[in-house]
Each structure stands twice: as structure tokens, then as C-alpha cells.
Image 1 (tube, helix red, strand yellow):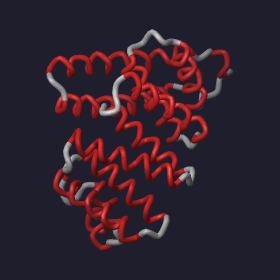
Image 2 (cartoon, rainbow, N blue to C red):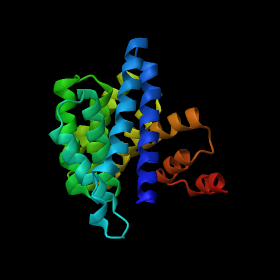
Image 3 (cartoon, helix red, strand yellow):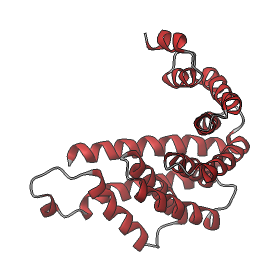
Length: 231
């Protein structure tokens, strides 16, 4: 349980820290303060996750991530007193964690619920809506729901381009996802366009030897340069 807990908290803190950085760049001082408070509430919720799990249910065995996420999601859905932004970000986090452990059937409703709440409660132009569309689009791609996935990713890309700028790493992430989706359908010219955009942004922002640059090069079929980076 301790290992699972540490992994979950570490992943959550990484996600929260990245979002807080972008919030500071996009928002005025009072909005950044709100983002900080929301991030703190997220961490309190995640830490509380481990107190909701019945220790006797484990009977000496290590609890799985699924056994930790299920009560967390149930608690979040039943507690509507939390701020909308906090609920949206937690639904996004829980849905993303479900996806990472292969529980796509649990991830999709959590992400859809988060997206609907974000649109109605925060606003169509919010960072949260763009992030959820990115994560839901990636999930739909994994489930071979390609048409809806492409629409989700296209909207996420347009929003991130407006919010963070055309040279942002958020845009690179979505461009890379779109490239993979199009390549899976043998739309190779279109895919190459997005892979090249992701590569250019990543090389500029991260330097030529970063692992994400290597991933972009691999997508473009440039194994020689990937080997150089990995060595």
C-alpha cells in the first residue's frame, strides 16, 4: 500500500505542479492564488483517499491502484460541496490514472463527467476543458473510437494554441497525439505535419537530447538520431 500510495501522490503532485506553472503564466495574480488553493485541496483529497480504504479489506495483501481509485471516485461524486475547479481537476486526475493502469472503461466516464462539469461550471475557454479534451481524445484513440478522438484532439489543440501559445509544450503534446491518430489511419502526410510541429516545439523548448525529442524522432522514423540521443 505504501508503494502504491507514494506512486499515486508523486504522479498527482507532478501533474499539479505542471498545471500550476501554466496557470501562473496564463492568469493574473489573484487567479494564480486561486489555482494554488485548488492544488492544495487536490492534495488533501488525494491524501484522504488512503483513509477511506478499509484496512481490513486488504487482509495483509497490497491494495491495487483500482481499489484505491474506486472509493476516491465514489467520494468525489457524492461530495458536491467542493469548488467546481477542484472537482473538475480531480475527475481529470482520477480518469487519467484509471487510463494509465488500463482501466479504460472506468476512465472514460470520469473524464466525460469532468469535461461536462468544466464546460458548464468553469467555461469553454478554460485550461481545464482543453486538458480534459486532450486526455479524453487520447483515451478514445486507445479505444479505437477514431472519429470522436480526432474531434476532441482538434478542439484541444485549438484551445491550447490560444491559451499557452503556438510554441508551448501543451501544443506539442496534442500535435503528437493527433499525429499518432492520423498515422494509425494511414493518413501519413497529415500525420507527418503534426509530428514535425511537435518535434520543432520540443527541440526548441527542451533541447535536442530530451526524451520527448527522441519520441518525436521515432514517430517520424528517424532511428539514427534517436540512437544518438539515447546514447
